[in-house]
Structure formats: C-alpha cells, structure tokens
Amino acid sequence: MQSSLIGKVEKAKVYAGERHRMQIDDLHVAFHGENSDHDVVLHEGKWRCNCDFFESWGSCSHTMALARVLEGMVPAAAPELAAV
Image (cartoon, rainbow, N blue to C red; front, side, top):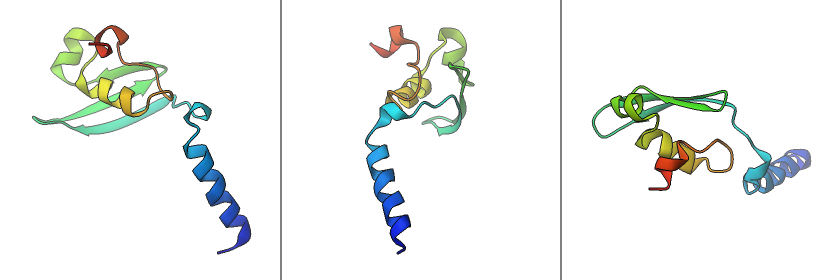
C-alpha cells in the first residue's frame, strides 16, 4: 500500500473516534421495522418519519433509535420522549 494512502487510513481511524468533528445536516434512512419499512428523514435539523406514531407524537422509535446511534452528530429526536 502506498505510504500516502496508509496515512489517510490512519487519519480516518482517528477521525472515526472524534464524533464531535462531524455534523449530519441531511439524512435519509430506509428503516426496516418489525411490522413494516419506514422512511426516516433528517432535514434542516428536523426529524420526519412516515410511521403513524410519528404523525401523532412528532417522534417515534425509529427517529429516537437513529438519534441514539448518531449521537453527537445529529439533533436529538424529541428530547422529552427520548429521556423516557
């Protein structure tokens, strides 16, 4: 492997551990739920999901799970529900 590429791989490993360097602004995720598939979107800091629960509550297990997985890089999904 070329030495410059080795350096980039090592730098990528360091960056991967420094989540504070990353901020996800827009994201689309196909979420395979237990009952059906859902489209989850983060756009301009706001979460959206096409599940029925999200429509009523403004948050759901899909958005909360993604916010937890990507913690520190995306806004929390309805903090009042996420703390439950």
